[in-house]
Picture 1 (cartoon, one colour):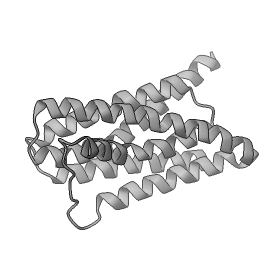
Picture 2 (cartoon, rainbow, N blue to C red; picture 1 turned 30 degrees about the vertical axis):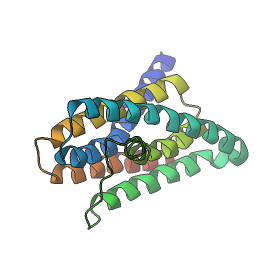
Picture 3 (tube, one colour; picture 1 turned 180 degrees about the vertical axis):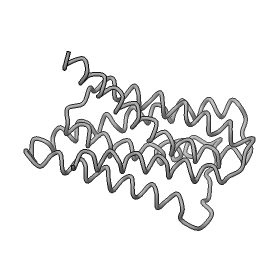
Length: 186
């Protein structure tokens, strides 16, 4: 009975983190979508973003397993601290003043930079989850699906709504990661 409960708890935690990380792709997608984007480009950007949301936490999880073997007993505090810092960084970035310059979404370099920028946080979370020996396949698939879908939703929504919604989306994602980091520490 406890095993099933622990697995469900891990699944819920991973899904919540995947959605929280997807808010970054969602919020930047809104900004990019407001500049005008074709449906073909939405699909291409979302697919590449999903791939990056799989690759980055995968690398992070292997890094986390290695760091875990080095840190031993303080692994939980290190992983929690990493999530707290990442969440705080996302919240601060959401409300930072100044217009962000968007890249050309039609070029391969532009799509790659966009996808990398919204999935770099997945690497850090992957490091934390690697320290806890999280389910590898479940984690990377959840992060990839959520990152790709939320990128697509942001790009499509950006064609229709105000730019201010994107700032709040990134702040919500940061608050969720901050809360999980505090839960890991305490």
